[in-house]
Image (tube, rainbow, N blue to C red; front, top):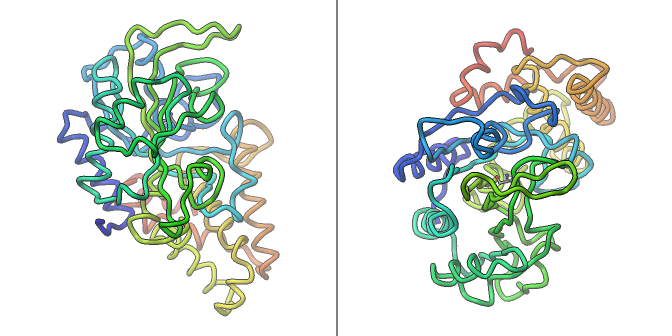
Length: 350
Ligand code: SER
């Protein structure tokens, strides 16, 4: 298996899909450009919503991105998991490849397998695949591509049907899960249940536009929207059993510890608070960088809530002075090589 830093994984992904005919498109702002159904960007496909719906034409039919996402309000909300969970964040980066009426299930599955197994070297004996209840085609394609039949499982609407919100593009999906526990202890029943099974990549076969009354109107053309968690890939490729032990978070947690003047034992005793502060520092840095300010409504309220949550956890580990700006410096330092607007706005953000 390859060993890569978080910045290297992002680049590796974009390069792989560029080599396979995809346009490398920049992340959109966390603030949706023109979508009243969405408070904050929650998936890589958001910026392509109108392209899937056939309302907007682009001069490419394949795209790849690393998209800034927040899952802290609305349909996809992970806030309460942040801290205790080894894998959930308010802010994270979603790696994606997209087909707008170009390739469909076959190529999406073949490329996913090629990238994960042939290129990154993930061991097939740790991978599990899920498909929507009646998606025989996806099941067949995974098996033809190389998956052992007993490692391809069917799940229902809750797990294998993806929609952006109550309305908009949606369709059956197929997920890839990575098992990181003892090899001989894995069981099919653990998938979508136990923490040792990490969902790393979701392949959505976009086919419908969901209307407010529940009607599913077929999209102009079957399309593909995939999303892989960069921080989760980092945990695997760096041999860690949780995202917070990767190079995306360790320097941030080190800074918190240094500012708090705590010992390693104190850090360990306050682990969930450190994680939440590190997560929230990233979220606040990116939200402010994208022009959100704390306030009483909408996304401004979300920012204020995250900021206050970070401050409260900070207080609980002993801070009696503002500290978040100093933590944000590390975030900007780490991620500024890709998100070059961050260093440019550093003084403002801090
Ligand atoms: N939109 C899907 C998701 O967010 C795949 O990118 O999981």
